[in-house]
Image (cartoon, rainbow over all chains, first blue to last red; front, side):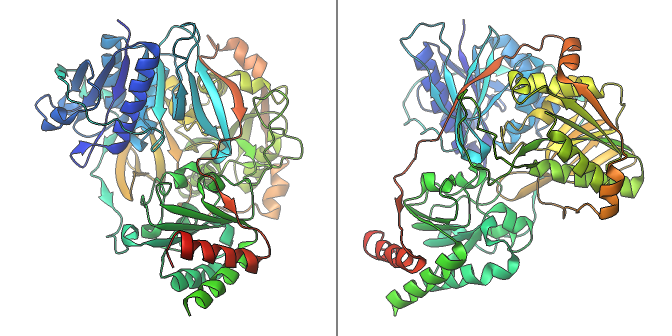
Length: 331
Length: 262
């Protein structure tokens, strides 16, 4: 029987938030297409985390277990997920769009002569329409400046990964889950990539999460020598200074001040984005902020899609004017 | 070490976005193009490896004739030669999905016997983030993604991979292998005048998409793009206009009396 199979990830000894969001997407897809939802994750069948899988009751929770999967490798995960997919024969396979999924899911899809529809932000299931009309999957192009609609064709399994924050996780719902161990056949020689232990580059001394206001600076600042104008704005506001990735890559501000998928995820009372265009990787780290203000010269910059207030203009004129206005208001 | 670097020419970040008549892509008139950012870092890693260990850097790119400019830029920076999978026009490659494009790339380099294949982690236009990984599977090679540093070892490579939330990981893998490179680790070099001059004499092998596709089995796409649209706003943005001073004063009012943050 055909189904939707959702792969969850464990992070910090719990099912990760993005996994719950992807599960909500999988349920929406299942409901719209009239398909049951099965869950899979790499864990020992007696792992207590399995009992925490809530939400709308899935049919079966597959616990993929093999000593060769204790550390993540692209080879191990590709092979084991492929075996489970061959066993379950789902119509759709859904992943959370994490760094780990980006590493192996395209390879897995290729093994089935398929293409992963990556970083999906919306699904139109076309429920009630002619069942031969496939679902529409929406993903972003050109750093978030365009939405594109895709569909899957042919009778093979359809693979998709779901962007962080795009779907709201379902409320918990009591329901019996059947846990089924799945023991893939793996050979140590298949695992060509040997991973070391994960590490953090430096101890975090700045906790951007504790700041009520963040002034965040991006590419638009052009040069390191221009940073004092945003620092002055942050000081005037009593805010912490944050940045988008290119600023930290250039070494202009330390990595610990980076907001986005490779940095911190923040949700302050006010997030003031200065010269940040708003690439997806940045937006996922800050779009939960209560109030977003954007200052950018490009009126079409994607940051304005999430901003509550916007000033379209040259930051080198706007920022000093804003600093002066804040000082005046506080005086 | 023989290194192939797959690079893509993409619209510049500041390019004006207008949807074209087909409704499936942007109007490319007046659009400037550039080397995809993470591909530029992949090229830089390749050039540094060559400088340290010797060998050859071969640039691989699929695109219409205009992509030749980006290929010459890579040659000017120090790549030794290039393979250009040339499409007849702006739309020919759009008929392929990510697997189809990767099959073209694989077919174009199948006789090269490279030790290492590098590419950027994702393109700035389509943003699929998959081409390198698919290529690895098609060629039967190990791969790793989001790589910041590459060291050659006795048996292969030791690489630094970026994880989420400021975490990192070292990986060891044998060669030949495919790595996708994250932006930002090295400083990108500029082409020198001498480099630009030399680039004009370097070999660029042009293969047509049609010729490669004719020999590639089963290149029918499984994922199709139906339409592109300007995104819906997630929030209603109040644009504060006027002079910088007026806009700043208006924003302070909002932050003070509506957001109550000042």
